[in-house]
Image 1 (tube, rainbow, N blue to C red):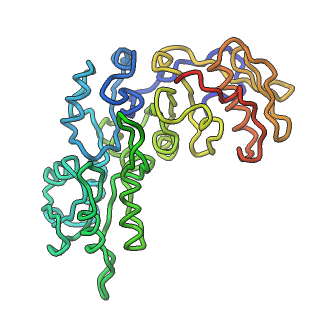
Image 2 (tube, rainbow, N blue to C red):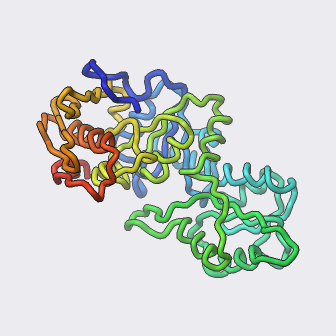
Image 3 (spheres, rainbow, N blue to C red):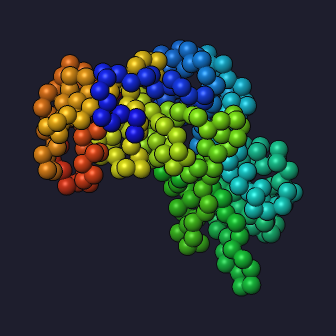
Amino acid sequence: MAFWNKSSAFDPAPFEGRELLLTDLDGVVYRGPGAIPNAVEQLNRAEIRLGYLTNNASRSDRAVAEQLRGFGLRAEASDVVTSPQAAVALLAETIPSGSRVLVVGGEGLTDELGKAGFEITRSADDNPAAVVQGFDPSVGWEQLAEAAFALAEEPGRDPLPWIATNTDWTIPVARGLAPGNGTLVSAVHTAVQRLPVFAGKPETPIYEAAFERFGTRNALMIGDRLDTDIKGARAAGIASVHVLTGVDRPKQLVAASKDMQPDYIVASLAELHEPYPSVETLKDGSVRVGSARVRMDGHIASVVAEGDSQINLLRAGCAAIWASGLAIYGLQVPEILYEDHWR
């Protein structure tokens, strides 16, 4: 972790010393049709290479870059790493180039498969060599059924390779949270009784694709979802920032399991450029961030001092609870520690 037992009041800014800044999109750069206030300005301030990682399999890298440029970001298709790109890279290691692939999904997948030289089909009757599945609003029962037919076990045949872009159970849209690719994969899984190999966050292939693309592993990941962005960054061995502009809120942060705990917690991307408050463990066992202090007394989290910063109180609460190693369902946590001031 980036913030244990420090004697100084501040650590360096989160991106200081990094060569690559990787960022999720929905909930970090934009929300619905509009950019999140100040997000574009703060990302454009970064003086290091900036890459965009998205699990959204419905659009091509060109379409994503065009959208980002519309918000005012300096983005080209080569700056965008998509879960279809990671899925096709896995596919290329699995079956020969030019093989026929059954596709469940839309342009994001078909575009990458075409660039890689694979033949595309929508029918199990065409004897595909593999199935690739990703989210698209057009996906319905017929496509899911064709995948199930293609993946059905056949005597004397090895299981057909099945690669899915990501496991996201939900996808944020303007009206709220809607079923995501994980839900659609689950429908096929129920029919065929096995799971695919996953390429997108929180799995590492999409991160490995980014490291190879940008030529460095010295990266910092920015995300708003613990179970994809932050978990994936930890699995890939890089530092992560959780920003409170998207899906997961203080309540989820306090309860985060070890594999989903970010190195930094910020209210907005402006804090990427500021020294980060050190987290200090004091002699009495309490954890201090700024003037906020939280102590674990057995299974009880106690606020010793609220301090003058709500975000520092959240940071101190998370650090104290995470350091205890105790499961959240066995703890007593005062509501003030996970009160959401950032909606």
